[in-house]
Length: 143
Image 1 (spheres, rainbow, N blue to C red):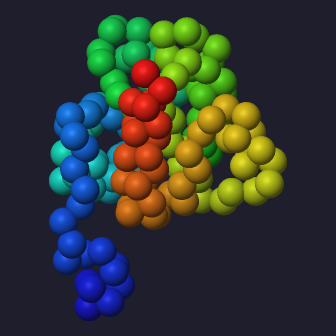
Image 2: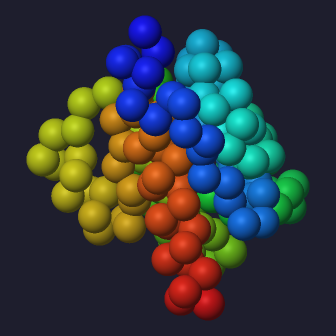
Image 3: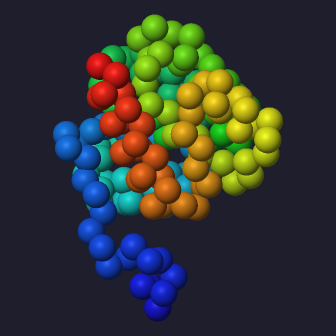
């Protein structure tokens, strides 16, 4: 049944060339626990933050993160606010950001384009991995 439900189930996931580090920001421990094995199985080292403030604190410690995966619909300070803060900070201005959302409306997509976010539906694991690979490749080409 798995190959019927997930067309990529039997294929090995593409691994990042450098085994990059990802900061996964989601207010739900359930979703952090759901996505962490997917990211790890694809060769990423995963750091966690339970919200935007935790993410900023962790990034302020100087950990090396190659990309950020953030839920846009977090309670409190939303992911879009986190993305705006990171884009305004020259240390994180070019960091790839994948924006997870359970609903992508036109306004959210427009904000995402302005902030150079890669929008991905929250349950799309292959879309997440693809977006991470594409955004990291784009940063590598720009460097």
